[in-house]
Every structure is written in C-alpha cells, then in structure tokens.
Image (cartoon, rainbow over all chains, first blue to last red; front, side, top):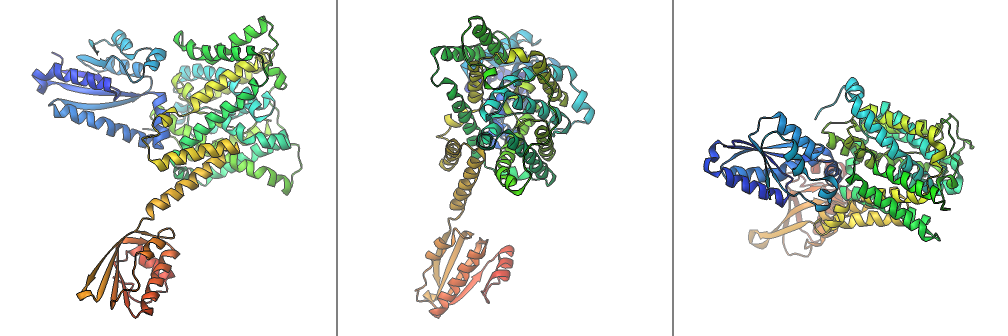
Length: 140
Length: 486
C-alpha cells in the first residue's frame, strides 16, 4: 500500500478534493501513512503576493499560514503531514522534487485555479503523469 | 533564504544566465524603443539607457537576476521636461536622479520604503498600466483600419504563440511577423524610423550641453526627485519579487546605490533615466536566469543587435510596438486588485483608487504615490484617533473618575475634551490614563486645559496611570504642575 505520499496542492477547491480523496484512500491504515503537501510558488504568484503583502518574508509567512489550516485538517483526520514550499515553475519543481525523494505515489487534482492558465501553460497534472517516476494519481 | 557569494553570483549559472539574457535582450529592444517614444526622445536614447543600465547593474546592483533598463514608469515622468526643455536637460536630470539614488542607498533609506502602504503600491502599478495603455492611443488617431488590424495581429501572436513554444519570446515573433507583413505588402504605415534616428554606434561619453547654474537646477530638481522616487519604488518592488521567485535575499541599499550609479553613467552616455523592470525580471527568472551574468548578457546582446540589425529595426511598424505596449500594460496592471476590491477594507480601496486617479490626471507617478501616502496617513489618523472615555462616580457623587482608552494626539483631543463634563457638581475629578498614551503637544495642551477649566469651577483634578513615555513628555512640555505622578 502507499505509505509515503506526495500531494500537490495550490490551495484551490480542486486540490481540496484531491486531499479528501487521498484521505479516503488511506483511511483503513492511516496510522502508517505520511502525506507531504507540496506547493510551488510561480512567477505570477510571486508578483501578486509581494504586491499584496509588501515583501517576500511576509508573503512566505502568509502562504504558510494558509496551508497550516490544510495541514491541521489532514492531521485531524489522523494522518501525519508536512508542508513543503518551493519556488519556480510548478510542474518542473514538483517533478524534480518527487523524483529525488522516495515517494510511493504522487497525488494531484486534475484542474487548478484557472482554465485560461491551463490552456496557456499546459496542464501540470499531465506533465506530472508523464515525468514522475512513482505512480501518479490524478483526482478528477 | 541565503545570500550567494560573488563567484556564485557571476558563474553559478552560466548556461541559464546566457540563454535568459539573450531572451531578455530580444524582449528589451521593442520596449526600449517604445518607452523612448513615450518620453518624446529618439529611440536611441532608450536603447542606450537599457544597454548602460543593465551592464552597470550587473556589476553594481544588489539583486542578481533582476533586469533594469529604460522603463515606462520613468518615461512617463519625463514627458513634460523633454517637451519644454529638450534632451540635454533630460540627460542632466538623469545624472541628478542617479546622484540622489546613490545618496538614498548610502544613507540606508531603503527601509523607509516600508512606509509606503501596499494599497499605494497596487495603485502605482495599476496607474502605470493605465498610462502605458493611454500613451498608445495616439498611434490610433486618424489612422486607417489597417493599423487596428496590425495591432490585432500583434496581440493575437503575443498571446497565442506561447501555445506553440515558450522558448522564443512571443513579442519578438509578433514584431518580426508584423514587420514582414507591413514590408512585403508595402503598407505605408508609420515605422520606428519615422519617430527618430537610429544610429548604429556605441554610446559616447559626453557632458550635457546646457548652462550649469541655479536656474537649471531648479528646472531639473523636481523631475529628478520624482524620478528618484518612482525609480526606487519600482526597483525595490521588483527586487522583492525576484527575492520571492528565487527564495534568496538581496541588499536593497546596495540596489539603490547601484540604480544610482547606473543612472549617472547612463546620463553621461546619452541615455534616459531607468529603473528595474518587473516584467523583464520575471521573464529572466522564468527563463532560467538568476545571476549577474544574465543582466550583462542582456545589455551586451541588445547593443550588438542594434548595431548589426539597426537597418531592420527602423522598419518595425509603430502598430507592432503599440501591440507590445498594450500587452505590457495588461501585464503591469494588477487585475487581482480589481477582482478583490470588495474584499479589501474600504479605506485601502479608496487609497488605491485615489493613487490611480491622481496619476491619471497629473501624469506623474510620484504625485500619485504622494497623494496615496498622505491619504493613508489621514485614514490612519482617523482610525487611531477614536478615543473611548468611560466615566463613573465615587465617594457618594463627590468624585468623578474618567477612564480614557486610546491615543491622545492632535487628531483625537477634540473628541476627548468633548466627552468630559466640566460643569459637573463634584469636588474631585480623576483622569485615569492607564490605557492611554500622550503623543504630542496637543495632548499635553488638552490635559492643561482640563486642569484649568476644572480649577475655574473649584474642582481638583488628578491624572493617574501615565505610562513612562507619556510622563516624560508631560514633564518636558507640560504646564501641569501637580498630580502627574502615579
């Protein structure tokens, strides 16, 4: 069974769904499971967050606060969990991280924040399925 | 977060820096030309500026991986100066701007940028986006439909070409395609060549040709101050964005000095004042650049391209540049601030809108920032000037206690005084300032006037619970002779 799971998230409702489905999947043996939640800050997000929060330190703090809720939610369901934040191109960073660490599987929601972005930038989930060595679960 | 060594800054990422530097150079050319035209100078002035600034910043800047050059924000500030006094005054202003920016860095004033509220910053970029957009409307005036078509084609390529590949900047593809269409179909549209001369030579050192006297200084100083503020604001904002994108730290005071030196050099080499560019820096980091080498490569490749391809560059139709500028304005505008405007506090939204409106009406970003900062201060003063006074009687109604909560200063004393009843029939009044703080002359004056008014009615007043700082202020300024202790 999958014990060490990497879960890609952007804080959107779609990624919430991926979290719920993952929790459902691991619930029979949740004591043995660990989920790392990974979030990648891309260039546009950096620009918007720095503009809204003033500087990089504050922006980082706000992001951590935002994901702390999700981590607490996962832990409240009895699964140990940690938050990982990287910077750069979301798919590239996630693929590199997933492949250098030893995960049993990678979970990702099928659609992110914005349809237009998906059209322009290509789908992150598609790239993950293609390039991550571990099994990838795409949650619809 | 960490700071990198000198060697890592230069040679830590050679391949990434060289490739991204080339990409940025290609994207810089149309912008440098377009910003020159906004400012009302020859295209070479912007191209020399972008070349000098990015090369100097590569060595002197505090934020590796950030791209600086001629920018729209700066160009917009100089329009009237150029129109009224000409290019030589612009060069002198550029040098003075540089000197002021160096001083700013030397005195480590970067931290004061924190005093500029975020809603003002958002208003700044939104106003910048709007002004860049409106500056392009002149290219559509009294023009045939073909201009609209060319701008449309430019925008379509810019936004759709990334679907094919993201390695080549889509703005460059758009410019090449639209120029080719205009040349082959022999459409007689206005080109870059019509806007000014494009010399295929390296910039030369020269002193600005103008009288060096007090009168000149008084003409250029206001512009230099505005450029200093606008330049540092955008540069330090961009530096923070690059900090966040690369998860590394940067030295903001060093960056201020670097921007200053870059502008001084630029002014002596015939370029207009510039600053960091948000869009180009994001492109640079996204294309894999994060070292000083990327900025150097961007500058050198830009100059090389102009010297080699100058003859082709003059044939670029203005419609293509207008398309690029419309894209830049859309990218500059912070759309999330409009989407979320109902969610932010109303005072913040008001500050943002006032900043934007001031800029749109005065065409000067510095005035917008000033108006925004002043308005935020007023809002802050209003918010903090709410004083809450609770009151109760003691000793069978012979003594009255006022319990004051809040900050006492010029804006709040009127409220404070009006909540005290001087005609009360008591023998003693106690003002409890445990949850209050005296900030200025007006606060001390209020206490004085309370004391004298009660004394006229034969009532004794006691002030209790002053905190340390407040009692020191009182001791220094106050006429209150008694009862100031705890």
